[in-house]
Image (tube, rainbow, N blue to C red; front, side):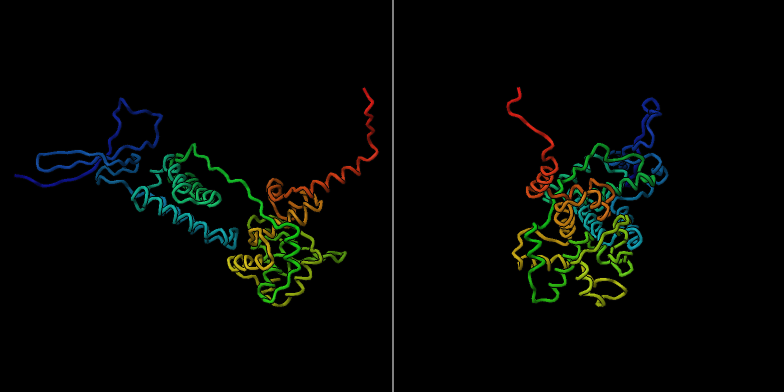
Length: 368
């Protein structure tokens, strides 16, 4: 008796009558066939593959790129551009996204990776649910993670790794922008509070410097004395381009940031204005500093940029167009997110308006 076992696979194509000319690069189901002697059994693999990727002779799909492999390649391309037109601060987001994708595939699909051609709308919807409900991540984190996945898919589409947008119909909701800034009293307390620790004093001064100039952390870290310009009237300006967007900006230095610069002049190497520590160490120290100053607002170094926009500029009557230019924003809508409109500012604006309109209108209660 012949009990030889044979297993092979084939794709189940449409018949000539079923085949439609409007369907290009259609994926067909992969069918398995088992032969033992004269007995034959078939089974569905629950997988499908485009016809042009199927090798009839060998009965296997030709090699195609998978999601995690493609994502790693995209992250590596980004890494190579750091310092040229990409920020090193963004790179860790790629690692976080990769780990979440890998964990999702293993927990939900029980696989190590997935072909790009197998991605579809249910995949991204399931991934969104997984991050929000099961991982309980914050909305800001979800937006970052999913946005990088969407970017990977767009690149795959542009490079013809896939022939159609698999996530068509999915919309990534953006979380409401939470404006974080110190109150005027908290900012004043931070400026005036003495510190015994020289390192804490230095980190406080860096925060204050950015609060008076609007510089982001990476721009402050890369600030050199060549970026400090002296105008004909003797005023000092910072003139450089934002590392994140390469948009040029100019901001006049007031007395406080000038004094901070003079205080630490000559201590940094390579013509840098400040010897800035890592952002993680600074943010940790700022929490200790905030507690020392009785500041209840949740603080990070980026809060200094909010302070510049809201407390130092907009609340003092600086036009939003000027603030937008000084902060190096692409458009004024971005600047508007930083605007902190409070009762004090509204009261001040209405007082100015009242003075302007004084004696311009006369109202008589007796008019019929």
